[in-house]
Length: 169
Picture 1 (tube, helix red, strand yellow):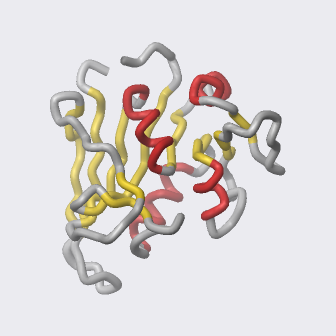
Picture 2: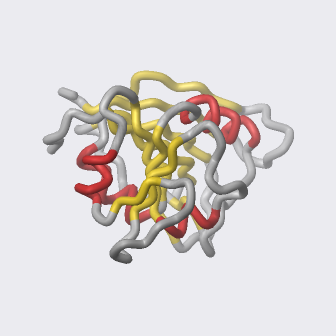
């Protein structure tokens, strides 16, 4: 379980079949979700793998500190903090404020046991994908807020904003 004092949150949009991406790209465009992502993560550290970083429309994302995890020793990406392992990333995270894990699939999987909070956008539709989010064990997480969106004219599916906190966390 968690052995650090950093505030680690995962933020992700997940399809009904736990799909999160394909060909290093998002599976949908949900304006409300992107706006929520921006509001939650601005002025915070965002932690991601290198492929996720290069998939961003603007690099680095403004008004955030990007912490990039790579297994290439001594690799440097301009205007970003670099980490060379999960432990190194945790050590370099903001000690005072919430840190947001933003992907990709293997990064999410490695941070699940370390996270205190999950910000999930649950898309109520299955998608064809090559990247999936690990299953959320509901005996470890408690749903603390939920907002259904059933009237988004931009999409042919509904979705729900959910926030979970780790039980006993």
